[in-house]
Image (cartoon, rainbow, N blue to C red; front, top):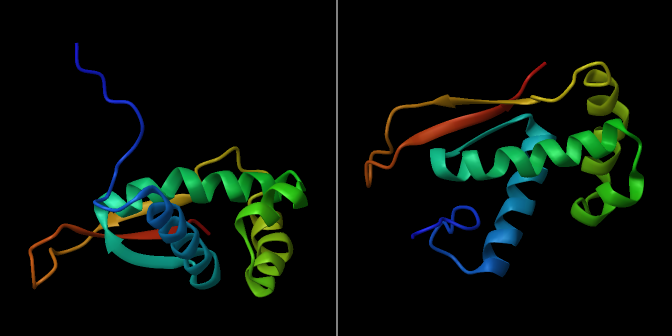
Length: 114
């Protein structure tokens, strides 16, 4: 019986994947939108939403594990956490865009819901 354990591999090693998710999450929090492939956006969504949930609950030490940029850290607690304080999850939205011109990869834009 074939079982699919784990998430998407995205064609990279585990350390590369973790670093890529961390960088994409920081850019998402800083600019509040990010254009990437749909597979990467779907992988980023639960990672980013967990960080926002920890910020809403005031768990600074759990947020600090993933966020190492002071500007993003302050924005999480000063802007985003109060914005989503009454929202029970679902902080992001993925919108599909036209395929990428070079390799026809499906693109998507992940945004923070305001």
